[in-house]
Image 1 (cartoon, rainbow, N blue to C red):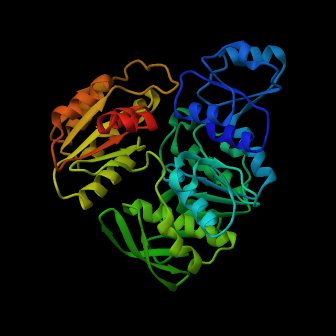
Image 2 (image 1 turned 60 degrees about the horizontal axis):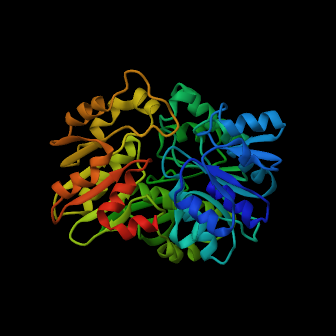
Length: 436
């Protein structure tokens, strides 16, 4: 929502907004001159002609009800983004994992190559001066969220799918419906880029043989091989349609970021950039906020990560294990949404097998109400089957736990899409808290 508001402001559209509590995004918008009200009240609508809302806002919200009574246009955030894709050539990057990093990488490559692309991302990126920008060139890089099905209103020039996993089952019910939606998303695009190593993307490649592909195997169009990780940088050999392009180094940890890099490079190539000009530009990339964001490396490494699905957690813990040899690995996990814990809670236990100590906080509800029978203690029990030491941490006790347990040489990584990051910032430095 804040990315969209910032783009509206750059387009000089009159706008105002409201949020339940102040945060870094509301502060940023206020500093730009956008009126931001705290709390929800019918009077906040003022003389607005339309209301844009996110999935966090329910239909019985007081501002939504007032908008209906006044006969205002009411649009979901994704509907407004879809309107942009109908007017501007769009690279729409979707997938269960990796879409924020891939979208940020793609925008970085275009910008570093001398273009002025527009982009809307799910997290701020330091080298891109934030999480959104309205540029002067006819190129729009858009992170596309599949969570509630609204992404099917999009018709991008280029549809990029990083992977298709089991998530958002409160909306899709089963894997068949998830795959069907992504198939429709590809069908509505002019061209597609798909990960050849993902089993569900492989099914779409069978349906859309004209699509471009990337992966770690020779049957893809763009292939990475001979991957070497060293101190959170990654090197690999790159080839395109059988032609060797040479060695590549990226300032990113983990094999998963090799996949993200391949998707961004193939997107840039399809847009008209050459691999020769893009490869040196990769060193200019910096990971977005909350995506393996290293907050401290002075004796103890503290990492903030957005991972909230088992596959993401498992990959990042393995990445730390492969690159951090000084001490213990401590994982802090904030379960995200009651519905997600309801249908996949038992899958989280094995994801923590590479952690020495795990702290599990209360479930972060986001906009959901508690679900009967969904209890954080069940998550703790599942994790305890796979990790040697597990603790339940009331959310307010995370900082005290870190002060008590963490010792020199440890690596601490916080996993969560909620407010766990605030505890990490508080532990590292009050100044860091203020900057976020």
